[in-house]
Image (cartoon, rainbow over the protein chains, first blue to last red):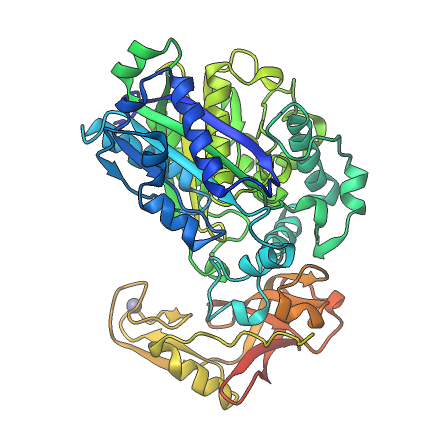
Length: 394
Length: 135
Ligand SMILES: [Zn+2]
C-alpha cells in the first residue's frame, strides 16, 4: 500500500500576514505568498512548471485572474506548462497535496506551485460577509429559506454534541483560548492578545450556544507551497516534508442531510490515512486540526483518535494542546485566531504543519517535530480530509 | 431602509411536487419502489439503490428535533427582524432529516429529541414552507 507515501515532498512555504489591508490588492497576497515560497525552497523560479491556485470568494473578477494565469505572469514563470485551479472550500489545502502530489508522481510536472489568496476582510462588509456565508455552500432550496448560515450551523453541531457527550461551554471556550495562546506567538496572526475563558463566555451570543468569540472572522491573506518529488526534494533541501498518508470522506452537500452531526467522516478518513502512513495517533508530534468554530476542532481531535469521545474538551482545558503541551494543536492559532481567509484557512494549517516539520516555526516551534497531521473540511463540513506529513518515512 | 425580502426556495424541476403539496398543506417525501427506503430531499433517482422507480408519499408530519439553535445575533439580512428564531434539523417519523424552523413556542423551550409536528407558513403566493411546532 501507500500510493503517494514518501514519494512526494513539500520543499517551500510562503505566507503573508492575515488581517485587514484596504490598500493591498488581492493579487498582492497571491504573488507575495508565492514569491516567498519560491525563495523558501531556494529554487530558480523557472523550475515551476505547474501553477495550482485555489479559488477566491470575495470577487469573481479576482478569481478569474487566478484562473487565467495572472500569478504565472506576475512572477515571470517562463516554464509554466499549466495553470489550473483546484477548489474544495476549506479542504483545498488537503486537495493541493492529493492532486499536486499525483501530478508530480506521474511525471506531468516537476514543481507544483500551490497558492491561496483572498480579500474577505476588506473586500466585503461585515453584513456582506454574513450574507455571503448564508448562501455559499448552503442549499438554496432546502436551507437558505429557513435562515440558515454558518453560525447557526456551528450552533446545530454544538447543541447535539453537548447533548450526547456532556461537553461544557467552558471546554468549548478553552479551544479558543488554546488557539489564542499559539496566535500570541504567530506574527502572521490577526488576534494576538491573550484571551480568557471568561472573556469568551461573556461575548455576544450569536446562535446558541455559539458566542462571538467562538466564531471565526474573515480577513485578507494568502499562503503558498511548493511540491516536488522526494528525490528532487532530497537534492535541494536537508529537510523535505514528505506526504506519508492521506484519505477523505464526502458526507453531504445539504448540511441537514449529514447522518451524524457530531461525527462526520473523520474516523474512516483518519483510519485510512494513518494506515497508509503506517503510524498511530500516538506517533504524531503536531496536530493541525481544522477549527473555524471550536466544536469542529473538538470533534476532529476525538474522531482522529487522539482521545476518546467526549474527552477532547478536557485536553484543551488542561493545556495538552497549548504551547509546551503534550500535543501541540492548531499551532498557527487557526481560523479562530490567525483569521479566516476563505479556502485559505485550510491552506494556512497545511503550511503551518510544514513549517513545524521544517523547524521554522520560531517561538511556537514544537520540539523535535517529525510527524504532523493536518485536517481540512469544506462547505458546511461536507467532507473530512486527513493528511499525514513527516520528515522521516516510517 | 427597506427590509430585504425573504429568500424563496430556488426549485429544481423534480422537486416541484414537494412545493405544490406544501402549498396545499401537505408534507410529502419520496419513496423508492425497489428498496422501499424513504428519500428526502427529492431526487431524480434513489440515492440508496439507484432505482428510477420512485414515487411520492405523504409524510405523517410527526418528527423529533435532532438538533437546534436559537439565532440571537448576526442573522442573514432577511432574517434580522425574526431574531430570536429557531433553526432545527428534524428527523421525520419516516426516517429522513430536514432543516426547518421550530415555531409556535418560546424559542428557549426547544430541546433535543423533543417531538414536533409539521405546520405550514405561507411565504408568498408561490411558496409555503413546512415548519414544525411542539406537540
Ligand atoms: Zn432504492
